[in-house]
Image 1 (cartoon, rainbow over the protein chains, first blue to last red):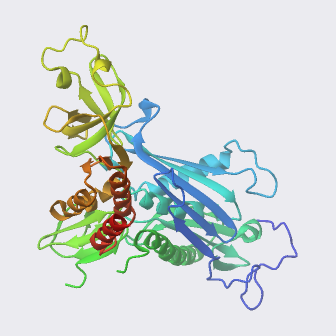
Image 2: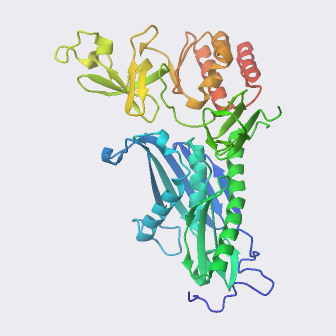
Length: 244
Length: 226
């Protein structure tokens, strides 16, 4: 994992990272539910410098018809990065990376969403990355889960996601873009906090088995932090001006 | 019990113990977990969550309001604000002696017409079959269509129809509520129509507020005096 800038200090002697965070600290996260009027459900997330908008349609008729399944509903996910989301213009056509992320997000949401209640229909998830700064798949997955709940699609649990990784030989939570480029490993985790099940786990880099276990634990703690914010976003929208 | 009603989101634990899971809850081991955003209610032996969002799922015998989207030579297709399209066979309108050669479907119902209908049959293998051969069903000729969230229809009706009766009496309007969240209001006076519309929108926006009935009542009365 050769670093781009050999001079950059990723972790100083006091345990402070390149953007001033501690090793077990996430970036600043803000989630808002129900931001779009025309979609059935929507959410907006700011995860550090990541800005992502998610819209949900469905359950609705499947077009083309041959894709529909008579036993269950289907989930379709499109992850898309805006041309202006990165420093150099990104071609808006779906890239190999975007197709992969669409697939992993779909597979991370599927265990949570109870599609069997809606046979012959499709739920469409549209994820637009407005600004990217490392860890977009986790942020997108967290926002998609809030948007699905906002659309009223029955779910067994929310899916919260957060990355952990290895930077300067230390396991850290929520890897940002610089750490991702120059660090040693990056592990995005999707987690259902109430069912205590992992729905997404990827690893880019090399970890020993002890480091791996620690990395998973740190990532799950991050997911729990994200989950509290997801909960707050939904509570604010639906129970905002009524007391419990 | 202090936790009889509470606000829940998907994945939240509603309760544990020997309860029967009803609407919008699942049993995971011993725990009863909510599957949607809503208000949980625990009864003597059952638990359910009243959802605050979500699409309309057809149920047999529901009164719905549909919009004709197309027709073939044998049936109409209706948009019933659901994930499935309503299927209205021509025999239902023309009677037993319907003939595909002699009768023209568009002479009875045209694309865009609103229809009050009832779900005659529905299961997960087929699209909902609807009927308009009953009293008070059929084409809607006049009135204003208001779309609200289907999950808020029970709130608009209120306990034994209290909310809707109050709005009807306060405005002299005739209101038809479809379980699918489409509501038709017809009223002689334009003021009454506006007021009824406003009251329905108010219920839609503030469905979770506890003293909503009083708020709607205040609104209906205050406007009446001015």
